[in-house]
Image 1 (tube, rainbow, N blue to C red):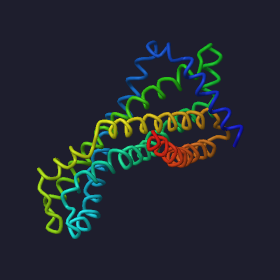
Image 2 (image 1 turned 180 degrees about the vertical axis):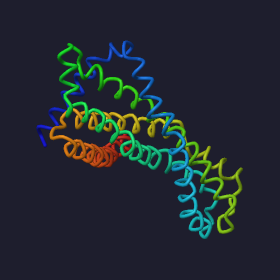
Image 3 (image 1 turned 45 degrees about the vertical axis):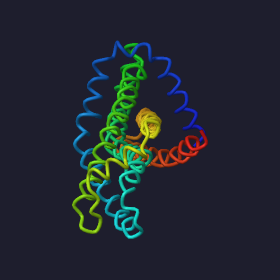
Image 4 (image 1 turned 90 degrees about the vertical axis):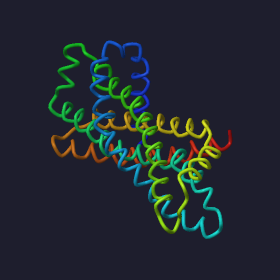
Length: 246
C-alpha cells in the first residue's frame, strides 16, 4: 500500500512538473475533454435531475407536516450544491472515465506500447498522463456545475407538482436564493476539483502499473474504480470538515 502511495505521489509530482508543456499536447487535452465532458453530460444531467427530485420527494412531505415547506428550496439547494452534486458526479466519472483511463493505459503497458514510447524518447507522463489529468480537472467541475443547476430544477419540478408537497416554483427558488450563497457553490466546485485529481491520478497510476495480460488489465480497472470511490468518500469527509472550520 505504501509503495503504491509513493508511486502515485511521484506520478503527481512529475505531472505537475510537466504542466508548462500542456499547450504542446492541447489536441490530446481537447480529445479527452470531449470524452469526459461532452460524452458524459447527458448522463450527468439525467442523474442529477432525479437526485434533486428524490431529495425533494423524501424531505418535502416531512417539512410540510411541520410547517416548514417554504425552506425546501434551500435544503435541496444546499444538499446538492455542497454534497450530492460533487460526490455523485465524481463517482459517475470514476466508474465511466476512470475505468476507461486505466484500461487504455493498462493495455498499452501490457502490449509494450509504453516501452516503445520510452524507446522513442517520449515520456509516458507527458504523452499519456498529463492530457488526461488536465482534461478531467477541467471537465469534472464543469459537469458538477451543470449537475447542480439541473438538480435544483428537478427538486423544483417535484416540489411544485407533488400533491403532498405543493411548494410553488417562486417560493422554492426564492428560498434557494436566500440560503445558497456563492461560497457554497465554490465549495462544491473545489471538492469536484480535488475529486478529479484523485480519479485521474489513481486511474493513470493503476494503468501504468498493469502487468499480466488481459487479466491484469481487468484487475487494474477494478482497483482504479474501487480505490477512486473509496478515496473520494474519505477525502469528502476531510474537505467538508476543513470547509466547516473555515
